[in-house]
Image 1 (cartoon, one colour):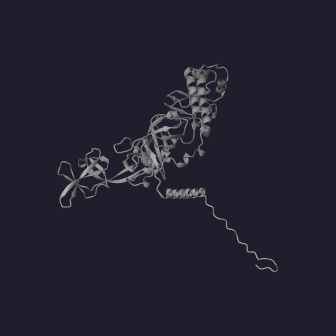
Image 2 (tube, helix red, strand yellow):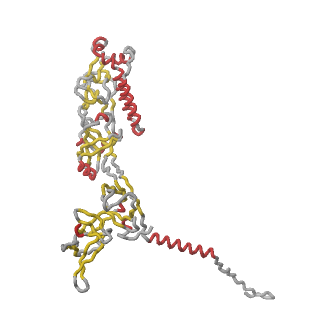
Image 3 (cartoon, helix red, strand yellow):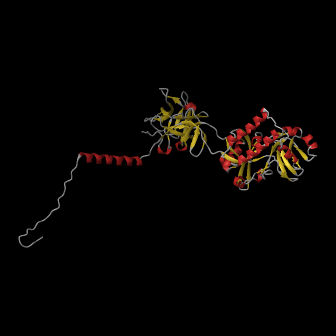
Length: 467
């Protein structure tokens, strides 16, 4: 740059600041590079995760909602009038027992509500029955099914009527003749059975007519038959079930249907009271839908006020060692007759006597140590890596020989107690999508607290494992 006069030309250069390295920066750089290398090696290498074997059982989804089917015979009113019930719902009545009355004039209801009958003292048995009904309701009630409160109300009302009107029932024939002039019709049980005071339209439902839509309780309607109501001649007044045999129908898929059909008879637990019972299985195929009908010979009286019931199928209750399915692997072995296996000099290892050809062309034998993994029907499962197909083996202290060729597979896991992937045979008792239950304390299997490889695909047999 040039200027006139006495001005001097000045050239300005940019000052470069020297790079100052200190010990801290060097250490930080080294650590950063080391961390990056470790992260890269972590993602590059297979991560071998151990799994500790524990005792346990599998919880499977065996809960179902079923429809109850039983022999329900509807009894209709022989005359019009006001109905008063005297048999408690769920009670077994005998032939000729008084179940209800039909008051053609309405004077019997007025008499019952009056004070002329006086007070009735409940016996200890009566109080026990009433208290038991209340306790059962309190324990089983759920806000999700509030309609059960109404069922309890009507059931309790029937119980109270039966107990409170005991003296009336004892003198009803006298009252009928004097007070009411024959206006009260007495209705007796036509046969022995369980009395029920409700209707839902499923009384004549058969297993072959069940559809999936019937399990939608949003469309389900249940009509309670209430005492002191006016009925016409021919109207339903109660139901009676004269058979102890009953059944529950549940919807199932084809795999579960095949499983249940193979079992034939299964044990179930009723969720309402946690009681257990055995049911006989019948598979139904109604169109495209599949159902299982479970038939029982007891406990019917417990569920007289129910049409739908929740139950649990008690299948596969085996307990044992619980392991993940990802740890299970299948491996191939040679099958060697038991007589050809011998122990080594230290008496702790097993091996075979194999024929070899020496350099001078003569034949001899050598001791080959082999791994033993199972003994089935007189044949040992031997590690296939130790022998070759076509090897000739000699029986100890004999001239008999055996040619190695026969193979078979075993199901097992890789045990890592000794620091390497050691194959152990397992016997699966039950298996779901995630876990398996295997038998414990087997000769060549697993024990509680053994460490196994969680993902069998992450290792190879006899691979050393560094934790």
